Each structure stands twice: as C-alpha cells, then as structure tokens.
Image (tube, rainbow over all chains, first blue to last red; front, side, top):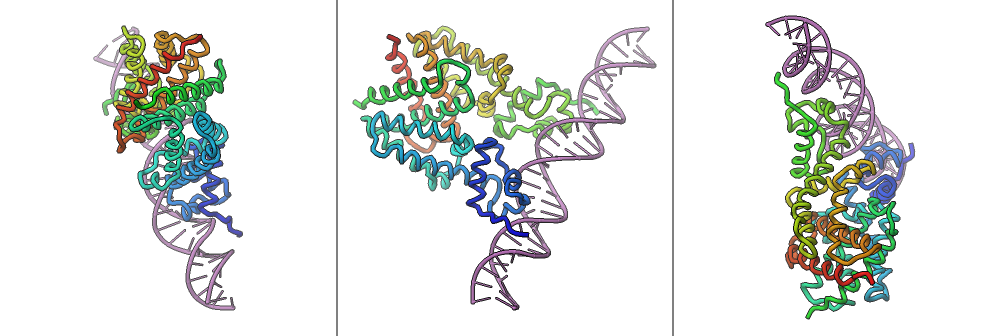
Length: 189
Length: 189
DNA sequence: TGCGTCTTCCTAAAGGTATTAGGCAAACCG
DNA sequence: CGGTTTGCCTAATACCTTTAGGAAGACGCA
C-alpha cells in the first residue's frame, strides 16, 4: 500500500479549496480525509483537531489576502489606494468565498498577533495616511473601513444585493466615493 | 409520567435563549432536548429538523428586532432616527448575541419575503426619507447602512474593538455622525 | 364515567462527525 | 541491510441527526 503523502501544508491547502467549494463551515476532517482517500484518523497526525484545521485555513487566507493587498497598494495613495485595497477584499471574497469566511474566523490573541492580520492593520493605517487624520479619528476611520468592507462583502456574498437594481457594483463604487469624501472632509482640526 | 408540554413556540423560545447563552451555531436539537429533560426524538413532532429550528429562531429574532426598531423610530426623523435605529441593532446584538446571529441567517426567498425582514427594509427606507435621496442613491444608501451596521456590530461582537483605545462606543458615535453628514451632503442634484 | 381516538413522548436503530489508543508496515538512515 | 522513525490503519467511544414504530396520557363524545 503506497502512502498518500499527507502533510499539514497539503491538508490545509485542500481544506481551503474545500471551503471555497462547499462553504467554510462545511469543512470537516471527514470530508478532507475523503478527498485524500484516506481514513479520518490519519489526519490527526498532521492536524491537532478540527479547530486547528480551521485556524490554519484562516491563517492561509489572511496571508494570501495580505499579499494581494500589498501588491495592490504598492505605488498608490489616497482614493486610489482606498479603492485598490477594497477591491482586493471584494474580489478575494468573490473568488474564494470559503477562504474569505475563514479569514473572518475569530483567532485567539496570540495566534492573531502572529498572523497576517497584523499586516492588514498596518496597511489600513498606511492607507489612511493619505487622509489627514490624527488620533483618535484615525482609529475611528480604521474601524469604519473594517465595518463597511466586511459588512458590504458579507451582504453581497449572502446574495443580499442580487435580484435588485441597481447593480451591486454600482453601489460599491458609490460607497467608495462617499467614503473617500467622508475621510477627506473630516480632517482633524 | 407527566408530559413535558412541548410546543413549537416554547422550543423556539428556548432555542433563542440557548443561542444567546452558547452561540447560535451551538444550538442543537440535542441540547434543546436536554434543556427540557426530554428525549431528542420527541422534538421531531414539533420541529421538522435542525434547520427548521434555526430558521424559526431567525424569524423570531427578526420580529423582535423589527418591533424594537419600530418603537424606537416612532416620532423621530433625520439623524435622531438614524441613531435610534442603529442603536436598536447594536443593543440587541449586545443583549442577545445568539438571536442577532440568527437574524443574519440566510433565508430562502419565500421565507424571507414572509419574514419581518420586510419591515426592516421598509423602516430603513422610511429612515432615509429624512435625507433627500432619489433613486438610485436611496438604494445605495440602504445598502451602505446595512453594510456599516452589520459590519460594525459583527466586528464589535467578535471582540475586534476590545482592549484598544478609544472605546468602541466613541467610534460608534463618530461613525453615526459621519454617516449623517454623508447622507445629508449627498443630495441628488 | 367510560370508551375510543389522537397526540405526545418514548425506545430502537442507522448514519455522520470528532477524537484517542494502539498496531503494522513503509520509508529513511546509518 | 537492520533498526528506527513515521504514516496510515483498525478499533472504540462519544455526540448529533433523523426516522420508524410503540405505549400511555389527554381529550371528546356518549
């Protein structure tokens, strides 16, 4: 009997694909074992448990997302940067809904601190340097952006905007426009 | 052996409490049976299945939320109304995290059309009458509000704003302020 | 009050997921 | 080429879901 060649790496990658296909909360150790044509127990040499699998998929997604964002932000500032960053999130969510959901998983503090989530925070701050915001406005703005992006993407992904005019993309542009105005119009006195 | 006096109504209500205590995705037919000190199979006379239970909890939450929102909106307009509606959502999510999560459950179209979700949509439109928005701006604004509220609450609930200054409530006020400005400042030409 | 019916809750059973313990054999390494 | 490591397996336990069919409480009507 030849071995299947399992590694944590491959399992996590396959888990991410599985998530995109069937949804992040349908990602199960059993389904993953099935995909590798291997018995369930075999995975436990490579993954601590089901939660561990989910966490690793989340970390992978955060990395991928941060990489794309960094690429998109390079050489951009102001509204350009804002739209670029936002589009990266939205496109990633469309292309990889399961991974995007994974990226929203709540991580425990140490894990989060060691994750690419930190890079996201840094990029958001960097993005806001294009606008003239002193503390605490900058923090408020970081949270606003997080809320709008996550909220919009989550609603769009859930199909909240389908079957109704105008097109979701128009709303997206509209929102980015207004956000830009909002951020520019609120310079700290 | 006396009977437990189960009804769909009581089960759904208890399910909602359970959701608030342990989280919506931990709501299980088994846990519910345990709570009523009854065998699991007994619940299947009152609930079609696990999904049915979750859907009913979602519908309950949407009703409660719509009732509160309607109360809060009565006699208010403009920014007052905006803040009142937003606060209802946020407070409900704080008091009843499980129910709030339930309210975000994706419902199939017919169920959604018969749910209190419709009232929410109407109230949001009514709320925006205080601002001068013609279509398609009004729809964009509806979507923006949905995104911001859901996004913010979801992040706050996930603990995203704890352990960092400034206080989450300050950000909430700041955001509502800017949203009001944004909506007022964008009258359709 | 008593009889029949309906409903409620039960036992039983099958199938899926998670997790651990312990074994055999493939792969690697000296 | 023998010994050790490691990978994948069998076996077992436990929990959740769902269906089938049975017994006894509750209810209605004479």
